Image 1: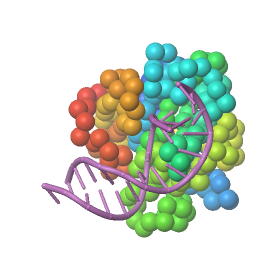
Image 2: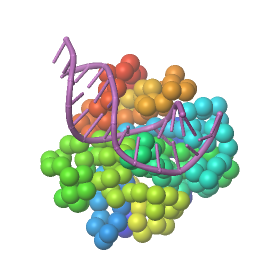
Image 3: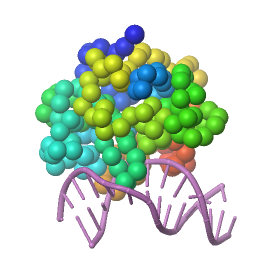
Length: 203
DNA sequence: CTTACGATCATCT
DNA sequence: GATGATCGTAAGC
């Protein structure tokens, strides 16, 4: 299987976040392969980011964020949901990119079954939703995306019609001024919440 | 169309 | 005991 190698994850977190747009996130949990194209991400850390889970140093929950770039940080939130991150930066710094939305590409039937809905929309247009659709839970925390058989990244590009847009991050109360949420526009699989926030078009 | 709130638990105060 | 990188449902325009 064609997958991203170690060098992809090198460089500043915001740069890696931008590079992840268009890349395919793949899972194989319970024998079924499911693939989605990343259309929305958020960068966290490594320094001066009060909204990051890593802001106060490593804890039992956040230790994976301090590992080598390319690890997979999965956490449980709000009593119901999991969210998946790609660890970035050099070991010990504590930074990651939260995957916020996917465009379904393969395994749509499995995604629909796991999400208990029909159609192509609403399957993976949010960080908790995409984890449910791909079967991602705490068992995948710490998995190495470069070598894992259960979760990995595969090359992909953004389309000529798609611009990269940045905006404030969602669902946080600290450091809300940082425009570290990046998404592809236009793309109908970006999460709905805050679609109307002031956004700046980049390239 | 929009906003409000409950679910449910790891982590921190 | 409160909060949180959320979601789905219900209720209000």
